[in-house]
Amino acid sequence: MDSRAAQDMAIQILDHAGSASKEAARGIALKRKSQLGQFMTPAPVARFMASLFPASALQSCTLLDAGAGVGALTCAFLDRWAAAGQFQFEEVEVEAYEIDAALRGHLETTLANYAARLPLTTRVLAGDFIREAALQRMASGRFTHAILNPPYKKINSLSDHRLILRQAGIETVNLYSAFVALALTLMKPGGQLVAIIPRSFCNGPYYRPFREFLLHHASLQHMHLFASRTKAFKEDEVLQENVIIRLERGGSQGPVVVSNSTDDSFADLVTHEHPFERIVFPGDPERFIHVPTSLGLTALELCAPLRCSLPDIGIGVSTGPVVDFRLLEHIHQQPAKGTVPLLYPGHFAGRSTQWPKDGMKRGNAIKLNGDTEKWLFPNGFYTVVRRFSSKEEPRRVVASVVRPDSFPGAPMLGFENHLNVFHEDKHGLPEALAYGLAAFLNTTAVDDHFRRFNGHTQVNATDLRQMKYPDRRTLIALGAWAQSHDALTQAMLDDQLKKLAG
Image 1 (cartoon, helix red, strand yellow):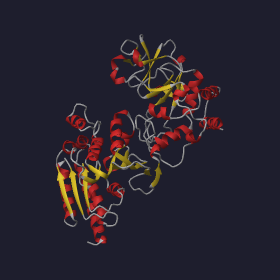
Image 2 (cartoon, rainbow, N blue to C red):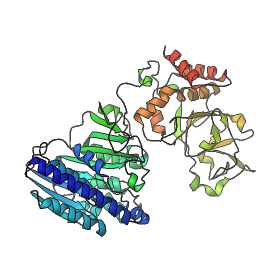
Image 3 (cartoon, helix red, strand yellow):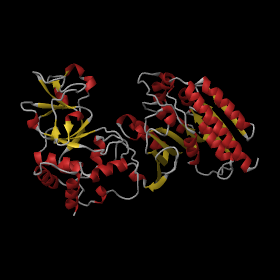
Image 4 (tube, helix red, strand yellow):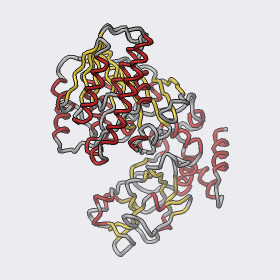
């Protein structure tokens, strides 16, 4: 078949797969989607994912598609091969897993159309990929390529899947990360894996074992971000922020290509290359994966006076230790005898603290007793930064100062888990230092830095520890300046930071 005819055939079949995907998506009830964690890959995303595989001179290819749906991803891969040029395979073997019988019927029909025209053999498997792959993991690598849109669903800590994965040396909390980890174990050295998955694996403690597994067994070659988190899977109304990654099994880690587009049209695609140490910071025990959104150093990195770590300044930062759903029996809606203030992000607005506050979902106070005391801090001055924001908010980093006189007579304070708390050995800070920290953290330079490297909407204590700060004396001077003004504008904060850098 000449390349033009192959290309025409490929477009027709992928368009058929896209139509079948939409038809299948409409046929799967929302409840069923939730049970299976299935979200169909739009054809433009499938084509882009297939384009990320490097050119290959291999004579034969073995392709894994786990959680294949109606085959949009495999179709896109085969389309690229059929078009001739970068893939020189003389034959391709596809192994596709799909647990849902209705989708499997579409998948078998679609792949049969390809096999009728190309030197292709296919196996469509109905089994549970986690079980099957765990059994195969001791075998030598079988696949040269893998393309995945795995299911998104939490794995119960007591489930069979969790036990099977643990026995396979994989500790993870979601099906998507389990699929990627298991697919990696089945790849040949140098094998290429492209997957679209939630960005949640990049940070947070629950995915640390998965990050370590991934970075130990593969090199990270490419990451793609969508600026809009609603448009990559708009047919399925997915609000999860997704990232496309390309991994090389056993590859030597070098620079990482990072690309961005607003949506699945890829009309405004921008691509940059970054050193790996700007993706995973050297010495970071959490192995957080940061995704820079542009080239060059941030204003924060270019500011020479910002050279101190938090230990250099003599302070620490912790995630708020009060996990409210674990202490519900001790939480009161309003202050009462025997309680102390319990602070949530909703209690802070600009430079003011609104406590107690009507309408707080959990409450405003927590009992002070033997069960809660270990989770509380002595009343004092603290700087707090909320951990979560929406992607559309103008600022990622929002810092506030806790003043002890906002809670007269309270011996202790509770900081809920959605706050990060700056402290001195679990005690309050000097007043000017607390205000200086808040002023620094509220500068545009700090927010831009976080947006560049932490496109997710969380600000974790580990992220705050990784940053560089002015020295203690400069922070105290900045705090005294901040306290001397009744109101601070963004321009005032940014100008003052420039003076410090000057």
